[in-house]
Image (cartoon, rainbow, N blue to C red; front, top):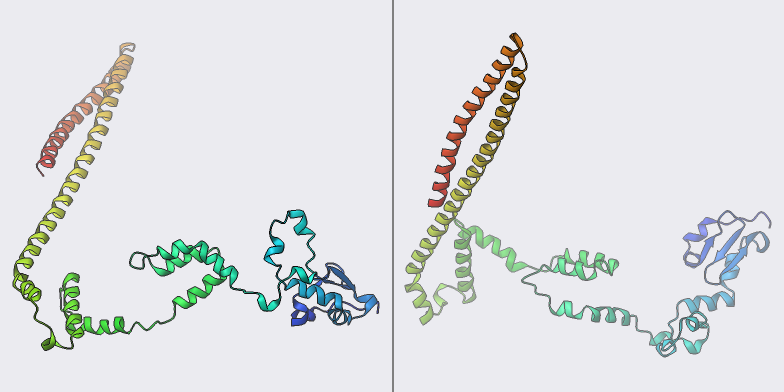
Length: 315
């Protein structure tokens, strides 16, 4: 018997999978997580787990692990008393036929009752709402809900609408026109045909005012497009003006730098003589000419900024 070792095949069997564990670094032992007991295979034999599962001690531990403590037992109980609570005592446990496994789910839903009541299906997608409510708290339930949301729920009216859209669509038809056509088609379909549509007073008034409403709509669209074009033009002019100001500031810095360098070279030339002085003065004069050219460019840029500012104010 001393050569008996733990067989990993037992872990795949249902009667052992929930409680039998291998002992690390020791193949001659097994461990029962319910009884908190080590089974010495070298002493008891390779069939020790089969014998242990039939023992009364193991059966009591298994029953206790699958039991529910009565609510009244847990009321006003301290932490120390909870640790020492005898779950093997039948008087502390609920009978199996009295256990309602939905109690926990019901309490969990009650905590989110306000969220479900305030959910507005026309403002928020159902999958987004459910993910926020149960995605993190109940990941297994969320996996099931995702599969449920992927199922077809018989959207026959929506699917038929695709073929209706195809029949009434024409080139260059705007979305609002398509929606209006669909409303008319749906209204006619509800009454069973064109000849069965009731000619009410409100319908006649709507038909008489249709042309004027269409003209008002055209005027509103024209004003909207003009406002959009004006806004784009204003934004473009503002962007150009900003670019001109950036160029002006850069040009001023260049002119200031050229003037400073020219003055430095002129001061250096005062302490020199001969060709060295002439060379320094020549460089200084060249920088001054470059600064003068930049000044003329700055004047042109200032005129452009003035013109563009006036144009922006007139928009």
